[in-house]
Length: 492
Picture 1 (spheres, one colour):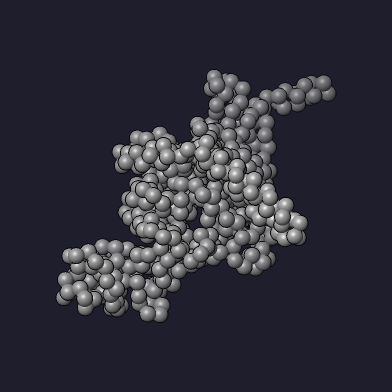
Picture 2 (spheres, rainbow, N blue to C red):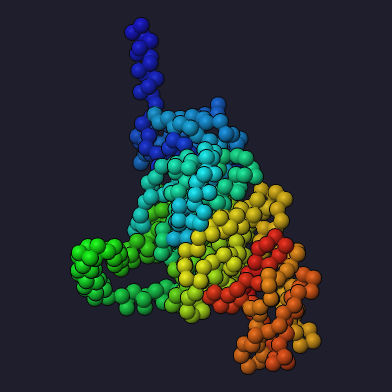
């Protein structure tokens, strides 16, 4: 008996004491069909074993305690499994598809804030969908440990899921009928430069002018002056709260602290360091991105294509995986200046510089006075149409809305051809087309659909040189394909 007890104690003590990234926790979803990295820390030079589904791998921690293994590709399974890593046991593990969703507030926006929440909640008893929300903050250096837990989708939990990402994975799940894990790492109000590693950005020749512009912005930011103004605003707000309370009225919202807001945006690479780095190299099928609003101001818009391309390249390099990557093109919204259409154009152009990529065109589902449009169901569905067709090779109506291919002048008119143009049609009158001659003055133009082309002309412009469509912050989407997806704005 003593011998058996001693053997038992020895076997228990032989399991290495490990520290794991937060994402390795109960209810997690592991990616199927590709090698699965598992990593963490343990005592220096100790041996760590990893086991699941009859598979066992062993690694030896280095002198600093770092270790990693790669599980062989796993088969998708809705049956809960146990993952053993050293002395840790992780329960209710599923194997299926895993997608990373990132960006700013329109990715962070929750299901309970989207339209038709009651219906979405009632249909959310889907325990094979799980979400991990990365809860860490921006950081000055790349972090290896994040924060968060996996949450099983149910009517009680779905309200806190990222809406765009949830409706994306819900559509994917409805077709694949496999477990789907969603990793949500997003922060409202943040620019793209905070989500790319600082090293990659500083090494980019294309972004040197961008950093010069940032220097000028930083030099103009007087923290002491901003703080003084904010303190006066807070003092005024406090008096308004007292008055509202005395009159039985709702209290006004407290002013935002601009200094804290600035810190939360993470500066260059801060959110990559704090909210993306801890997730690398967790196995994923691909990534979806909804951001751009914070890059529509000042000198930033013309750099967006280079930044989005660099983000995809940098993430793929660090994951060592050329995973699929798609984004939501900015929808219609009223904002003065040309930043909004320029960022849309930069997003369109990025399709040619980011391999294995897609774009959900949302020009018809924005809201003129709401930067957070409620129809996240359709934004997610369009991302899913791309994924189901381009990534999973399912039969879908189309993976995109019409994208301009060529614009050729014939007989005083522009003849425009498109990709994704099957069933090209107009909703209402075909408007939002403009052409310009050598003088560069844009004129409203007549447009008509001929098969899978659009012919654009204007009596006032006998020799057209340029053409554009929906080149406004809040245009009306009038050109669609047979899949019901609008055409992307463009200029040629």
